[in-house]
Image 1 (cartoon, helix red, strand yellow):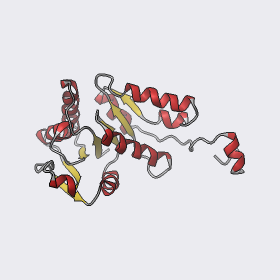
Image 2 (cartoon, helix red, strand yellow; image 1 turned 30 degrees about the vertical axis):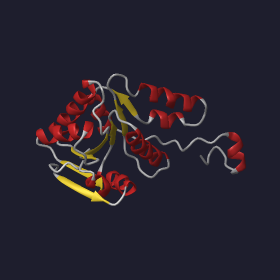
Image 3 (tube, helix red, strand yellow; image 1 turned 90 degrees about the vertical axis):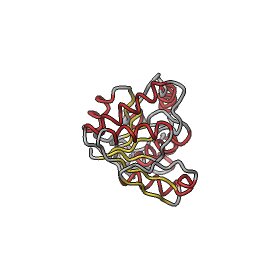
Image 4 (cartoon, helix red, strand yellow; image 1 turned 60 degrees about the vertical axis):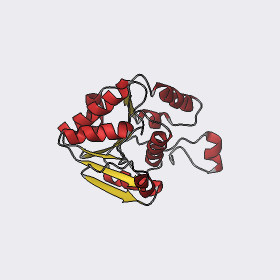
Amino acid sequence: MKSICVYCGSNAGNDSAYAALARDLGTRLAGDGITLVYGGGNVGLMGIVADAVLAGGGEVIGVIPEQLVNWEVAHKGVTRLEIVDSMHTRKARMFALADGFIALPGGFGTLDEMFEMLTWRQLGLGQKPCAFLDANAFWQPMMTMLDTMVRERFLHVDQRNDLWHGNDIAALLDWMHAYVPAQADKWLDEKRRSQLKLTSEDV
């Protein structure tokens, strides 16, 4: 595990626990010699985690669309700042640079980026670990929603279990280092299986 992409809010939230979590994660990444790949901003949790890695002597690679550079939110002090033409290019580039993905608390952008990685993994486009690092049980409602998806048969239980959720940074990194991807294909119900003329051996 040489590099980890962290998705997180461009705001710091309304509780100091979120900033503390971002700072602790950045410090630990630097201490373990793991390069941070992130969205290239200098604001919110994004700026906090990047500054913590830099303060610990670690390497930070920021990937930011040109539009956001023009809005003057780019972090000019990172090890390397890559300016790309779009959000789509940003996602692909961050995927290429990172060995795994962590979501700290955040909003629409954080969810968009992490769930695209989960979808790519489900479709076999990558086999990189994805984790939700929590504070104040921020991600717990999301985990409950994922359990509902499994119960209602919209998500395969193996895909649900193939991600990490918790608040212990050391345990998270241990899990990432030992990660073995789930082998199950996307779930198909019997009616759809019949329509596709698939047998149980095919999926």
